[in-house]
Length: 115
Ligand code: SF4
Image (cartoon, rainbow, N blue to C red; front, side, top):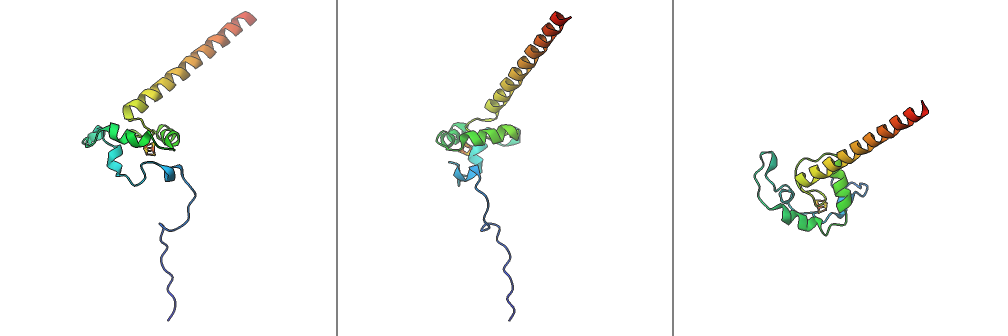
């Protein structure tokens, strides 16, 4: 009888290590991290509970960087809820804008002294 190859089981294939493999929330129900009732999703758990996992998570920085880079709009990521991440992004935008204004002012001043 010919051997029929077994279908590949993607759950057993080797894959590179990912930061989320070390997450303190591994195995915790995802709903815990999307508790704040935004986007039409009813709030079920306080965000503070989700943050208790983040506070002891060894990959918190990586998680937050992921959420900021991907513009994750909802849920607790890297210990911050969506409002806190939005504040962080606003502060970064303001700082970048301030730096651009200062650079333009400096260039303008240099141009006027050179003329
Ligand atoms: S920081 Fe929080 S949401 Fe992110 S991986 Fe760790 S426990 Fe999970």
